[in-house]
Each structure stands twice: as structure tokens, then as C-alpha cells.
Amino acid sequence: MPKFSANLSFLYQDLAFLDRFAAAAKDGFGALEYLGPYAEPKEKVADTLKSNGLKQALFNVPSGDWAGGERGIACLPDRIEEFRSGISLALDYAKALDCPQVNVISGLVPKGADLETLEKVLVENLKYAAERTADAGVKLLIEPINLRDIPGFFLSNTDHAERILDKVGSDNLYIQYDFYHMQIMQGDLIPTFTRLKDRIAHVQIADNPGRNEPGTGEINYGFILSELDRLGYDGWVGCEYKPKAGTSEGLGWMKPYRK
Image: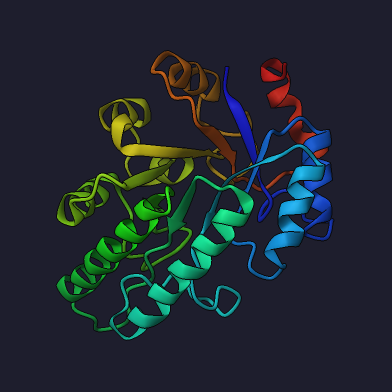
């Protein structure tokens, strides 16, 4: 039976950040994820998690000026020290929130940049980060993201993610597999997941087109969720979608999976 994590960067947007925790717990979610908790003191976030009986499934390492249009800094040659400082901050929060994994957003390709240089920077940053996170008992993830939603994103398919993992050569680096992003970029969702399942530490879902809740588009999530069970995936399923008419009102798709 799949277990669901509410992505608070997408769900319950009518509520203040920490108020979303109680709403997610009331609706039957067992865990949370989001871009990052850094705007709030880690002790306050930890207390809110605990008081609502929730787990922290995942969050991203600091990813630059998100509001200003940046989408990660891990591949950028002039942001290496900032990225590595961000790993320390992410681990500080991961310890406080008892979070087992953190995700790296690779970044956008700067105009005129040399792709080989960007890849070298990303690999070296991930080698550093994978060692630091391993020492802390935290898994490190990277996420391919589709080029329609984020044009110019450096890491956009699983073939590239595999190559990065091979170059880093760490047993503490994994893929975050978002079925929505990969439907747009390459399709063949379950065969790809099956082939890579030992290298995947977390999955996320949204339907396509529209990035709305399961059941609103072309992806057969009944089949996908049953296959995840059959294949032995026991991690959280991150709900990273845009509700069509309110988060709670749109959770009918989740009823068959609630205990």
C-alpha cells in the first residue's frame, strides 16, 4: 500500500507554511516535503512536525534565489562555495527534523556556458556532498526535471542522471524519480523505474498535462501505484501537484489508499 507525502510547496497554498502541517495530517498524509524549511527556525519546524504526528520525507538543499528565478546552483562554477555551505545548512535541518534524505536541484545552463564544465562542477560538488551526507546518515538525491516547465535546466532525463551517478561513484547518491517530469521528457515510466529502482530513493507524482492531481490527465496512476507496490518500493510517494479546486477537495483519488 503506497504511503503519501504532501508537498507543501504545491498543496494547501491558501494557508501559512506551518499551518499546512495540520491540514496535511487531517487529510491523511503521513509525511511532508517541500522546497526547503530554511525560512523557519529548525526547532519550530521540528515541533510542528511532531505535534501533528508527521514525518519529514525530503526537502531540497539551498537552491539559490528561487523567487528570483534561480533553479539550483550545483552546476554553476561561480557558486561552488555557496553550494557547499548549503550542504552544511541542509544537514543541520535534516538532523533536527529527522529527515532521511535531501535533494539537489542542479541549476540552469547559463547562456554560452560550456556543458562539460558544468557537468564537471556538478560531479565534484556531488562528490563532496555525498561524502558529507553519508557521514551524517542522510541520503543525497538528484532530480531530472522537464524542459517544458523549466527551460534550460541542466539535468532533464534519467540517462543523464545515471551518467552523473556513475561519474560521482558514491553509494550514497540516488535519483528522485518524478513521474510527471519523466512522462514529459521520455515516457516509458514503469520500465524505466523498474530498471533503475535500486538507484531511486524517492518518487513524486502529478498528472499530465497540467500538473494537477492524479486522475486529471493521461497518466494511469492506478497502474503505477500498484506497480510500485509489486516492485517493492517502500518509500514515500511525494504529491507534488497543483490542485485544481483546492487541496482537500481534490483528494478523492487518494481514498482507496487510505487506511
